[in-house]
Image (spheres, rainbow, N blue to C red):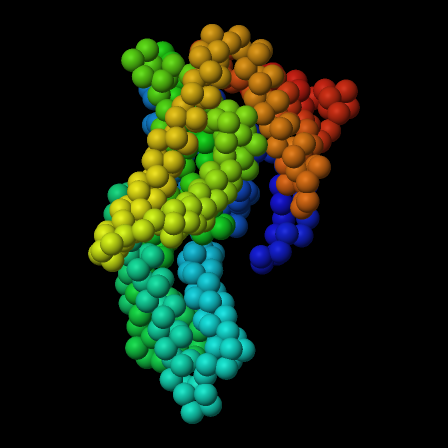
Length: 408
């Protein structure tokens, strides 16, 4: 667990609990990653409270929806200051990005000598307009997240006043027209599918009373926006004879697991793609400069054909080649997982976490993955059982605790 103050990583603890039993009535577990609090309350405490209240469900999706509803009710009961701060945590980072990019434009303009003193005010205003225009396009194209209850929160006059207050505090130099446009961005940001860095991942998996095979559903939640929990569904996997028969899904810091499972990860894909985009035009130019054309128009047509071919290659690399590598590698693993005994699956899960832990230990940066690993197996026959679990207290000194647990 990484403790942060602002944008700085301050401290890492390797004793945090992130894996829990979600229901006393069904074999369902929940895993949490990224943010470990919700509306300034510890998520582990909220999960334990929900567990005592959760009734029997037919499907895992129902338990997940009930848990989101529980969190939504908790958010609505939070103090007004906490609810307003939840909105600030979404809006302020967006405004900070606009401000930082704006400041960067100013610094470049002054350093390069492009801004004369008599044009300074005009250029300052134009620089901010450019950033506002860019972020407006980004958030309009992003689409909306989901909200518990179905509908987006209504922006009443008081809520608009809060957004305007945040804008005035973060970008006080904006004129009236710019403040109006920034308000439009803030409106888009609070409902956007683009989540803040403070988002929390929630993974719910197991068996409902009516499930023959396991189900996994995962969300990323971004706090509560004016009384409604904001979330995005990231995965829904139903193991079935006609569909997926096995899946291995990494979450949070997943590059090493993806590299093992799929043969590549997002970083490798990005580097290969950038290399190809740099080199292919150079190869095209080298070939075209050695060819002779009687008609200059033939050269221009050849250049256009080369550009189309370059684009087609890049798209095929992304949509076909990378996907084929992923599919082939994933099938090799998941074909075995389908028939793997439960003890072996537990060992595999622990080994995959260790891959990332070792990478963090031997590379630059903070060891954000490491320490004791909790492992649980969920099955129809045994329910939710711990294979490996860390306690902050020794068992031999706390016999009464374990007696209480056995009696519940």
